[in-house]
Length: 162
Image 1 (cartoon, rainbow, N blue to C red):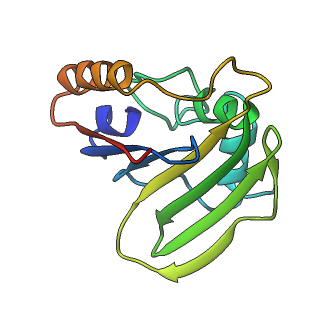
Image 2 (spheres, rainbow, N blue to C red):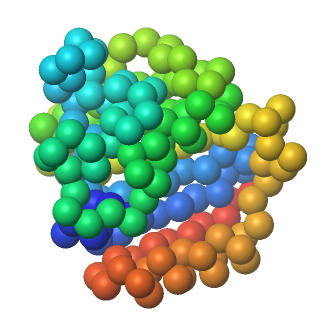
């Protein structure tokens, strides 16, 4: 939602997958892929694994934020058995996978060329942490409808493939 508030995204697609995974795709700028200046690994990996590494911290972030204070995706990663990250940025599709509470499977990999931008996060919540990892469509539909209403110009699509 922060990318939309900053004027860089207009659409978010949320898909409930048959294996209880959830895919969230936006058409924003994509998470930066360059090496992080102090962590000496990709910024994608830092954003995915370090609290407060999101776009709201460090001075160059969002003027307005509707998210979770820079901890959103790193916490999702920590509470998931698996996360698949795909970033479209700087002319390429970039991929990185995480397992078992946020451990990188391998370094960020550059894939095929693209002219598109955006980020896709697919996660599988850890059933040993959560009482249920099956999401209620109607609850999500209502929440996303509210979010879209409160964020002018933002469209949120919810699809249930279960």
